[in-house]
Length: 147
Image 1: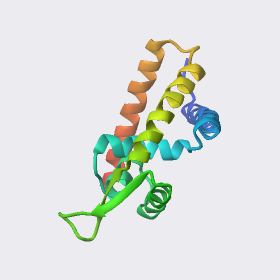
Image 2: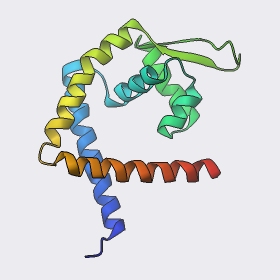
Image 3: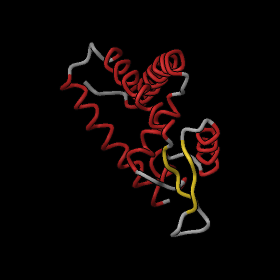
Image 4: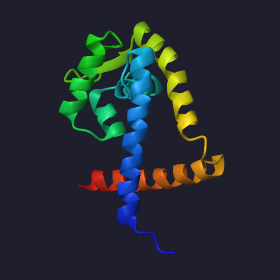
């Protein structure tokens, strides 16, 4: 049976919106943090100190939008900027103790809600989807870097 890839794409978007909304609601209710903030904090933790441009490369939004997102995290005390010794035009972003604490509280909520929302899907199916999405993301990022 042939798959309608346009319909597949639209279904993927609908699923992403509903899943994001559900996880966001729980994070807001229990930890007073957005899923977007948690996502950025996870990336900053993984990268160590990083630049706005590094975050842009990870997420794929504009530098302006990312700079505003980092400003919000910094205002909330979850990350800090410091001078970049390798390039005075940019700063390095790192988690603060409050950012680490917020992640420690929010990450279990994120994992639990994803696990709960995807409980009806086998690990094998999740792995297949993860592989397919990683392949597609890689191709899209490669194409974007060529442009």
